[in-house]
Length: 240
Image 1 (cartoon, rainbow, N blue to C red):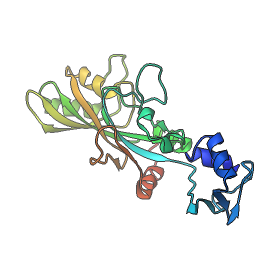
Image 2 (image 1 turned 180 degrees about the horizontal axis):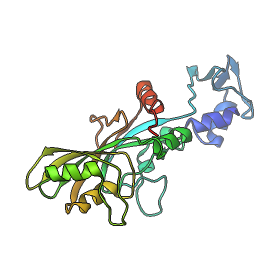
Image 3 (image 1 turned 135 degrees about the vertical axis):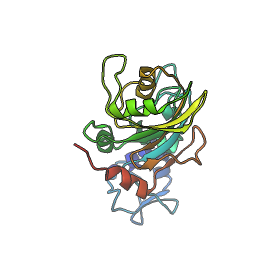
């Protein structure tokens, strides 16, 4: 990989700015000053430093975001703010994208990465990756609803969902529930409740597989996944 491309990809500036860093002799590779941006380096083996500080290269980035309402799960949009707009430059230079989507008015766990293979595995229908949501429903949720969800419900387009695990956390005029599903149909949670005559008034995703939302993240905040969390995602077993 060209040294100027590597540094630009890592957010150390534009190609022009990186060229200036090289020209001033700030960059060393294995102890040797490099001034030519075309110089080839092996990011995983060569020791690259900037003003004596070692530059750690990473090919992939894995981010957990607590998505706020009013932001869309897309990489770019002409009119709406996207989750990518919430990222710092040093993270956005890796060109991450949201794995799946959360509706504009839905909060909670959203994974962003530039690892296309992992994203494909997590979104593959063959994986049946469980996703758990917390929701507030506009009326009392009953044991009958739990049974209906266990059997799958028929959506407004005639599609019959796979079984969902519904738990009632608080019942009343407004009910707090937790729902785990293994599909990702358009507006699925909302449409499942509509199928039993109820409406979702608040929705938040709290987990994806074994990856749990870090509740210390404020809405709109994000962090890199730990090595353990990345391993959990990569080692999910498909359920054919």
